Length: 411
Ligand code: PEP
Ligand code: MG
Image 1 (tube, helix red, strand yellow):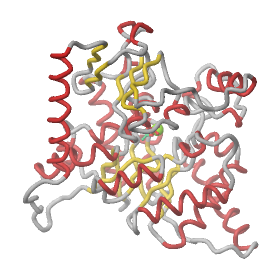
Image 2 (tube, helix red, strand yellow):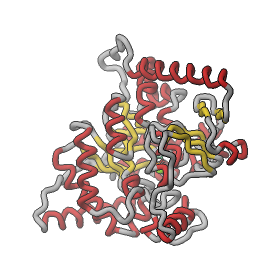
Image 3 (cartoon, protein in one colour):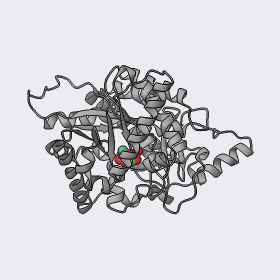
Image 4 (spheres, protein in one colour):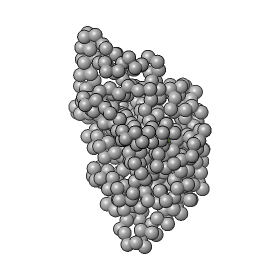
């Protein structure tokens, strides 16, 4: 609602879509930021983001991370308007922000930044990388992206594929429903950029906190539990069919995999299969070339999907576990709020049980399972993920080198 109201105001007052921003690189400090705004920011125009509200699992923080923009969220009243226009240092490693730092702090933090950059360079280009022995378990390390620039960053960081392309980012950046042709060009460019490696494109996961004014969605008391993800796509088959047409056309040269978000039942998949058939029939009728057999998987990000994973595995070509939503829905803990940021032991065990159950169902059915939520990048869990046979971990491009190093130490 805030997003819609803000945009209408901007249009009525003629200030356009863009907020006035300084002409030098700056740290963006605000009470909160909507995912649709975060989707439009670019590093290094924006050097960092500091927010009073929010959580590390919010889409705003995730989109900033994908773009390599350091972000601090949930700063509370510690951050106020007094910081405006002042020099500041944002230390994301410690979760500290220094406003108007003295020269000694500034020097110390500049040194720390250089050390961090050297560390990143080391993990990106390790000397004498160990090869895992033949027959050993391996885990593919892929990237989560939202744009073609992110795909480039994924390649630069050595991604073995794209495990999650959040297609809704393209929708969030559009002033109206994106048409088939513009989507086709976007998907084709993303696929080209990965040079034949797998690219998993998730159909639009709008609704919840990812609102676009042109959809005119009704106000909901609990949007995260409402018309979101696949529910919205099934309620608006026109939008989904346009997207599927663009995807099927873009997939002719291979590499493409499609994935549906927020699945909760087998019936949803049956309804999706009917829409897929209809879409292909229309493309064939119009004589448009398209890929017939694109592997199509589903996200396991609701407890319902994890519990039904045995049945769902018979219907899907692969699984991808979205731990951000799986955690919020399992623990009844809003991912938008800082309350849920620290996963305690009990919570962790509950989420892990669902992950294990999902991995077992996938492997029994002979399909692969990926983890693409933020947990995938948490190196405290890498060993456990490898032990339970997770086939792929998909993380923000900037987190790939660190994760690869952790995985290689274990393998
Ligand atoms: C997730 O829920 O873990 C996920 C990867 O999807 P998103 O963060 O886009 O909701
Ligand atoms: Mg999700």
